[in-house]
Length: 292
Image (cartoon, rainbow, N blue to C red; front, side, top):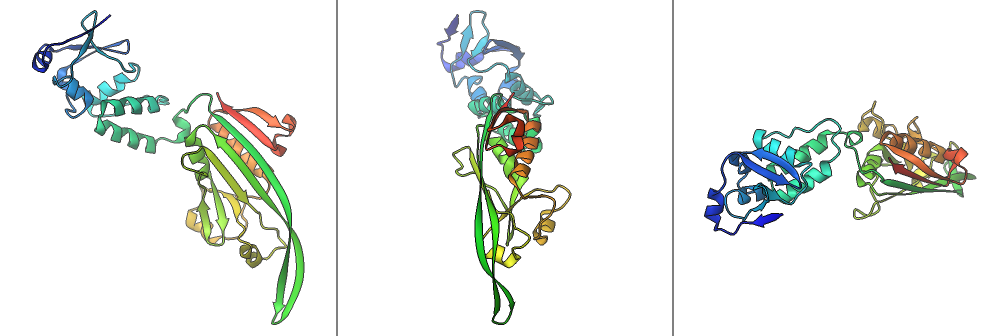
């Protein structure tokens, strides 16, 4: 049973003395006033300097109706001014939410720096996150004039295959990872992928590999673009300078599905559904994966 103290602010503040016992969402912590008021402009600072009335449980502990599991990391930061998280910490989103509630701005900054330094594969991610993929391809016949010399042209025809992938993922960080892994190759160099809408969890990829019989200038004239993987062994400048096909280019849908599986399985996803034939996953038309 909880009791709300009703004295004035000064008596509320003066009634506290070290050590201070806290009940945070059922978790009991013992700390000091100096620690709790380290960030005076935070919610905790306001609570323990008498600006906000305190609740107590039936054992006299100061009660805070927040998640108690990650509160220990907030206290540790206030004691040491250092964010110390265990390896493989998977509650970063919850910790950020709690820190935002308590308005501890320096700790929010630390969390942002921590997120930037930790690879996505080590951040955990939400269990049950889902990826849904639909793939399409269409053959188009292209007619073009091949110039042999002044006023000397030859009409030629070749087939190009256009690929389209519609991908939905409930975990936005995974979409960001895909946008870092794949690039479009255009006449202007490499360009990055972007979600269809920043507010949505959808990514659409469209590309046309260049057939050997199609001259590069004709390929560029049609505003076609290829799809390629980021190559950790070369710089982006190297890739921009090399406008011809390289081993990282995705030239068919099987190659794309293979790379998607490599990335998603490494992040803890498992294949949940393959259409039309589960035994021919690289030739699928739709695919669903779930994070376990």
